[in-house]
Length: 397
Length: 227
Ligand SMILES: Nc1ncnc2c1ncn2[C@@H]1O[C@H](COP(=O)(O)OP(=O)(O)OP(=O)(O)O)[C@@H](O)[C@H]1O
Ligand SMILES: [Mg+2]
Image 1 (tube, rainbow over the protein chains, first blue to last red):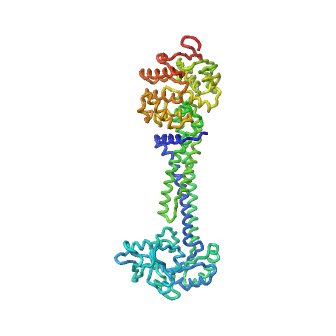
Image 2: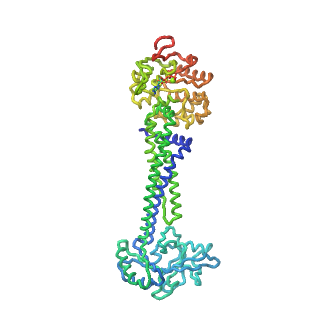
Image 3: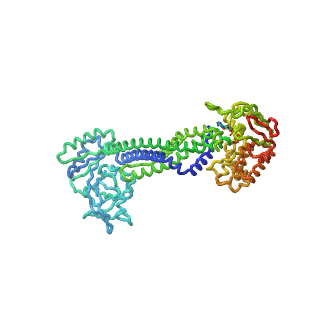
């Protein structure tokens, strides 16, 4: 078969421009089918991306212990964990949370979350500084009145001024800004209240500054990083045993971020399979719509077919023409579907806590599928068109 | 230039096959204008379709410019239609969604070797020649019957055919447009193109060099002799 030249596509486009409603109606199935496919791929890519960025920021061997009531965790325990599992634990940090009204001079942005941290925190949660420095061991030991502000909070407090070096008021106390975080572009998943998500609107202070001094000040969270995921199993068992033994002092939840994400992604996978099935059905229905349209076209354009044959078109030319026509509407529908899919992926990422990511690969897949639908469902009508007898169709004129 | 021998056409049918004719013979020299007449249903259109390689005879042989075309495969027949034959139909037919120039350029498109830019230039020139230079980008449906037939002639001439076949080309035209079209066909014959025209109109037949009647399965010259 001769490859249909560019002209065939131009003419096919002209054909559908004069039969726009017909084309539009016949292609709705493909639009929604391809849209669904793109959405499925965007959800999958988003989940992977989320996993990767979370692992990149936290590491795959990270475990978070959360105190369900005050006093269940403290600095002494943090020290003990490090001492008990020296060969497994790579890094650990303890955090205490508070809420307070924050303000600076005239601006009072309202309540913000105070995060009491030690010097390990920034590296464990991969925080990047825009300027200044983070909390140092010295600050923790001496309960320095210093703080590091999240990028958004910094802008809210000092809309028109340099943030570094300013004084921020929180509750009845004050601190001097020694560091400003960079805009937090990687969106960390919300791990069931584990405070690793929005570093943008937080105020970080030395943990001792907000909770008190001594070696056993209370903590809300202890984060332990095992050297890698392989050590996670053994380390987790030991951790659980330690936590179990100290149950009397209060409930402690053990959160493994990797597991939380996996759990979430299992749910997403169910959704993906369901949507994929629906997409397949839609694509078949869409293909049938195009096929139906093409069959009607063959019937109503018999005279044109006869004419083209009289002017020198071979059967192969007629087949190429009708397949191209089917492909043009299928691909046009596919492109609309890609846009629809990308938009719904954006919307889904917006209204839910699912991360979605539209990629060029998803677009290419949508394009390829619509092309395939055009070829598969355009072939039979095209063969019918090629079988139209030129003499008879001309007789009907 | 055009020769048929023992040409027969029967349309198959499970109970009653239609035998339109079974043994036609005809010889037309180059540049002759032949008018084919006769009662309705005798097979004039059928014969024209055979001459136009749109259909295969059930019996007999057909030579065009010395080449026997009756035995050619489908691809080759399409090429013969494209290169050697120009068609003008009664209600001149066009592809409705293409403009006039694209319609006239269709034989160029199916001629394969040429590029479309040159085809459009030639189509534009041919339309200009028949006074339709200002309608190149109009849809065929927007044209009058006479204009359409002129465009149809332009299209038939696109690939410089040696044979032009016309089936009742004046059937839908008024006297003036008929006269214009027949004059044009006459000119074509004078320039060396063989023309075979089916018509019911005695006046139209008057433009031809030769009038042949198809009746009772026989071709008969108007002067009474068997063709
Ligand atoms: N596809 C077909 N199947 C069966 N019979 C056919 C077919 N095509 C034409 N015929 C028959 O062949 C005969 C010749 O038809 P044709 O159209 O050639 O006649 P005609 O001389 O051109 O008539 P008119 O002057 O009315 O146009 C008619 O009896 C017609 O019914
Ligand atoms: Mg007829």
